[in-house]
Structures are given as C-alpha cells and as structure tokens.
Image 1 (cartoon, one colour):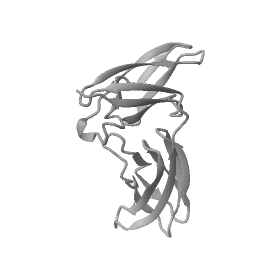
Image 2 (cartoon, one colour; image 1 turned 45 degrees about the vertical axis):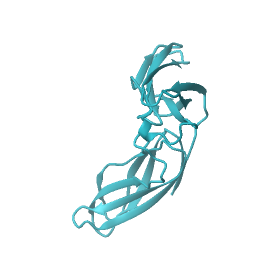
Image 3 (cartoon, helix red, strand yellow; image 1 turned 90 degrees about the horizontal axis):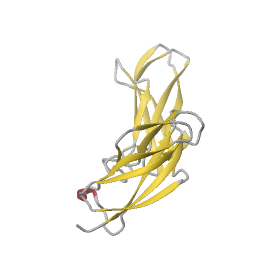
Image 4 (cartoon, one colour; image 1 turned 120 degrees about the horizontal axis):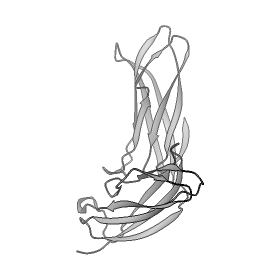
Length: 205
C-alpha cells in the first residue's frame, strides 16, 4: 500500500480486511518504523480506528489508520490485526508513505540563545468573509510551541498568534547550522492552509 502526504497533515487510510471461516474479534495495532531522524519533539503519530473490531466471516471488513508525520522523506507503517482470544496474527499490512513539504507561504528568521526561551508573535489572517476557527500545530512541539492551539477569527480579520521558541542545548546537533521548524495553520477539516518556515539561528550566550 502506498500513500503520499504533506508534512504535518493528518492522513486517514481505509484498510480492508477479509474475514476467515468464522467470526474473529481482533485488536488493531499500527506503528511507524523509526528512521533515525526523530527527536522527542517530532515523533510521528499513528493509531488505528477503531482499536478493536469484529471480523465477520468471509466478509470484507473495513477499519482506518490515522497518521501524522513531522519529518519529510520515505517512511514505513506496520499494521497488525491480532486475535484477542489466542494472540495469533490474523492480518498484517505494510503501508509505504512518502512525506513531502507543503508549499511554504511565509518565512521568518529568528535568532535565539540556546536554553533561553524567546517569544514570537506571527500574523494569522482569515481571508474568507465569514467567522471561522484556525488550528495551529508545529513540526516540533518541544522547540516551537503555540500558546493557543486555535484562533477564532472574524471574516478578513488578522490576529497575532503567540509562540514560544526554546532550543534545549542537549538536543542541538550543530550550533553553526541552526534548525528549521514549521508552523502549520489548518481549518477544522485538518487540511493544511499555510506552512510557515521558521529558520532558527543560534547566538552565543
């Protein structure tokens, strides 16, 4: 199974499982195989919906896998259905995912001192003529954290989202290179509308 997804976008994939000769109650498990690029703040999110189900005999049974990736590149997702009564593996699937960056709509350069928090205020605009809620998320919650996860905006209104930037010195790989973190704005359907790149450069204390 192959899917493509944008960085930070939530993907829900329907999986079809064929029932065996008799009805079987199974638990559903899904996990993203590590690729060595994750840190504590940008680990992928992955789970099955529902967590358990009844496989009807000789029928096509449907469930969903929901996932969200915070680092670009190729990833593998393992999905297992396990018999609740015996612990035996009933079905196994491999989902291949290509995660790519969405179009960058804005870009900011920020200088920070490692280990010291810095506050940002970035403009969020509702370009529609009606009130709506915009959700905020980032590619690394340990480094870039919104003070509020959502903004209620009137039509054509601009508000300023407050965010905190904090780089733990223990998680730094290269003081010279700096890091890139992404802020995503989404509507209530979880479709990414804007992707803001924050280029973080390090200053000496």
